[in-house]
Image (tube, rainbow over all chains, first blue to last red; front, side, top):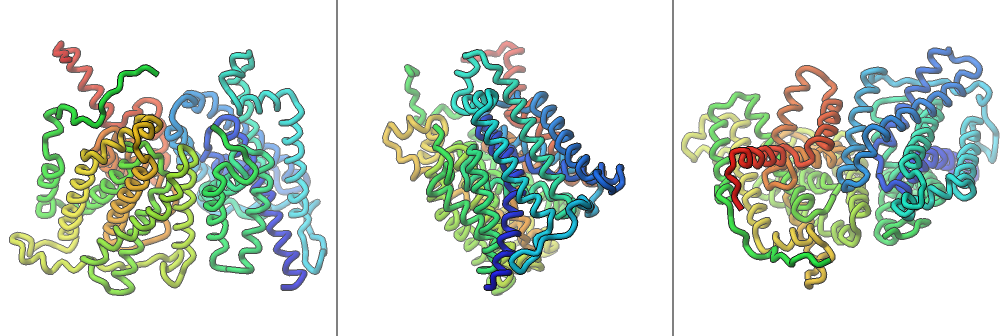
Length: 293
Length: 339
């Protein structure tokens, strides 16, 4: 193994990791605070990707179109998430988890087909922002500027959300809701509003991630069910509901996948699932999580 | 908690509706289709029959024991692959490959279940999902054995020449014969599941579902019972998978992909997981609607999702739950209230 090969795998692993972190963080926050395992999170990500393509196509791919599209994806999906939570999901909070799981699965089916109906089944690709074209020669390999941007944006968002959770008053309330929803309600906090806010924020992250990935992979039907399983693995490894756990879980996943390909090319996919199973067996609450109830 | 201690192990008074030998009745009702049914209807009912076994096996976990398995498709897939590989690659006869599929799936369920029953609730669901995805990854990537993403095409039909010796069958097509074979095997399997559900073992499972802590308190080894039912359910799922692989004349990684776990769960809920035959009714409705609706539109998942929403919000007891509710209301209306 040469230095350049290791560097190339490292960069691709880090890029994968940061994308997965962007997607999985919303999934983890919603589970940690609302105890809802949201299968539709991957669909939100897919809708974000399609919105980005649509906006870029409308604006014509010049200049700042990509950034406007990314913002539009985040906001559009956030609105979608808010509507879903307000109208439907909130009626299922007291129910068994089976019903919640199937509810979010129903969303997967509906959103998947709606996207097919609107955008068809062709692969759609989006031109990345011209500012970030080209790449950096580093350690004998080329790291595209866009990937470098993602590797920087991931931790930046992580630190931002982490600070919000640990320092702001909304973050305090959210952490309190994760511990004891009823007590928080009894103390006079508006738990319903908090939940809506949480779901909207998580949808925003999913939509943003969907938009940001478009310059790297093409937008196709089926990207929703594919990504949600990966996001689950990340969240389970790090610890369901643990925000920083999700960050490290994404790092472990990304690097295991990219270096696993070097060691067992056939079974790198297998290795991440095996990792998930081992973590669930040894520490069901994840490497960085805390046991709940 | 000062609830009266109900003796759930005592045999409750059996209502008339339960004394009907439903499995036999349904078998006798469906068997003539092999002679009078069109090619299309035989095809449809074969699929419904196989899916019904799959869904009823899941309901051993879901409805009977209260275990939310989100990876039941793993055992369906193991059964399909074991049977398909034995019959296609090694030319083993169906009489050996079919039970081997059940045993293989039960063995996989034993290994995975050993770890799964250590967890509860959402973690149980996640671990079952994780294991099913491991099986999927193996099937998807292990080209030499499973055919990778191409799967195993052209799984042969079982040898059904011997059926000629049964009067009336010699004129039947291969599809009709396979229908009769599958129907018989599924009927036997469902009858066995029914016996398990009604046995003392089955009542223990229900006790675990109703109150896990209390079941443990009265000295039940809850994990051992959960593991046992996990293995049994996995084995029957494997049998249905084996039949399905032959029915579709091929085994593909999609059979093990997680959305199929969700699909079988929808069957169970749709029919009503509180009823033994609920999942079979769910399979009937789902497969039939799928065929009908895909004639008009390719957007079947959209219809299914919408149906699921209606179910969750308006009819959480499923079709049979709704019918039972309706029946109760009618009885009260007619003033024949019995204690």
